[in-house]
Length: 365
Image (tube, rainbow, N blue to C red):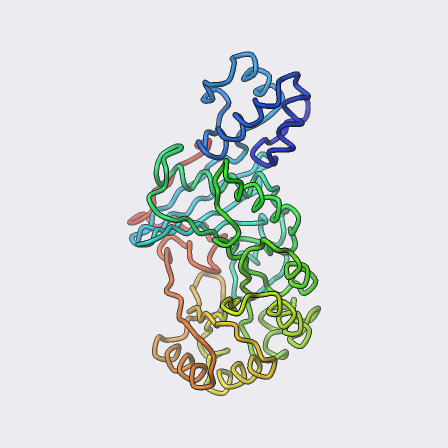
């Protein structure tokens, strides 16, 4: 069996080269690209505007979709979590979050994660492998099709967040390629301005992102105001401690427009990083570096076997008030999909909730 090319991961230019190599005219590539991305079709047989002979060629040498659905979970708050498998049997998780004025899709950039953050369940898996651009794009296509129907125009805006499994900046090239494909006006047309990518603090990639004109928004997981505590919670800090990380943040901020801000994410762990003094340390740290970033406070989402508990709501509010008193823009992120283990830090949980989860076994995308 020859190599199968995943066409969803090709740009229009690459797709043109592929189609011409099959002996077909270039305009067929535009048809295929539109079918894959604008119409969100996931089989060549469904592309009935293509000649039967071309569809046969594509079925022999290419794939329109490669992920297989293992389980689909539906939360009481409308959130959907999808557990899928790659062709080589690695798990991929995606979360669809409906909101009043927009939908948000949280996608994974890797299967598993190598960073070993102690408050994140995905870290228990370790890194299995990085995903291809096509596998990243395919997560978005499936979530939209599942929510609205194949190719149905979405009724409101779509935002993307690279906050699923994996460290996106350790899969930087495939990530940027996926974002480029999804931004194409002839396809999904989800532009970088509607995308936020979260990193644990891969300093060289933060600096590189600052040089890219059309780039996604940046969010940085901080979780601690001191190196001593961050070393314990996020081992990546031993490679790039806070001084180096915040120096890169200063450089990144210089590339922003005056009205733009990037985001620090701070997971609130009861009795670990949520004391008044730690709030003051965090505010002083950001002010010392002159950063105008906002801080998202995220109550920890519990999942066995993690040893942490979420900070009580009143503690989160006090922490927030201290930050704001020191001039830091702080917000509390409300958890979504906790009952189906779809909330931040819970991916890789395999528990089922029979009261709210629909489990669909081995259904192809």
